[in-house]
Image (tube, rainbow, N blue to C red; front, side, top):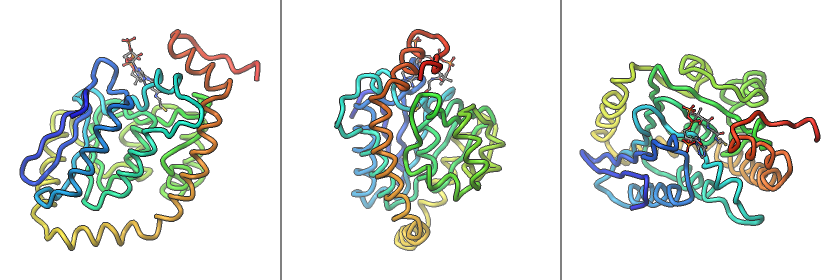
Length: 254
Ligand code: COA
């Protein structure tokens, strides 16, 4: 199994835990590959009925590793896209348990999870514009559909962290619980689903997703093209350098 990914199976539930706390669970190429492998294993194994994605106690994930972003080669297929495609294709219910920071793909991947439970300390953020980038994961289609154009614009244009209450108000989160109850709550929900008739559950999931599949795929094609170009551009370079040098970025020259 990949470094920084812990996978366990118990009571027909596959739990995928992001485990790179020293870097706030920022997702590396290797971690995406490990997550893809776990999701595929879950779909292929008839003993697994539910997938639970979580982070460490203090953090869900700080999103894509910014050093990997800075080193991305032009024309290279992003492992994040492969991960998202696998998550979107998952046939079994996916539950996310989110505590602490959920940044970038840490928030957008939740749009593809079936149920999201958040700790009261969870902080979500869509900082793409601030990084000289644009939305990904089909979020340019899903966010306005979920919460309306204005609220989506506010979260994306300013890219500021928002609370679990806001995330619940805009439809990203189902329920907020105390931090120390997060995993138990999500696990209990997973256990309940694992006892349901599996075909009925899978077909219900497929039917729920049917209406949005082509809109998401279409958005992802357009987003990926723009994202890849922006990632190689000067605005993203300045934003990544500023993060690594722990300074405020300066976009006045563009
Ligand atoms: N990629 C690579 N490293 C990251 C990272 C990321 N996305 N997010 C955090 N880290 C690293 C920091 O560089 C730091 O490493 P160091 O201790 O070797 O200097 C370590 O994780 C701890 O981060 P720090 O910023 O000190 O923690 P914090 O609690 O003050 O803040 C965050 C946590 C998540 C709010 C903050 O780290 C952050 O904003 N990260 C960037 C998120 C981001 O822009 N992601 C990309 C989305 S597209």
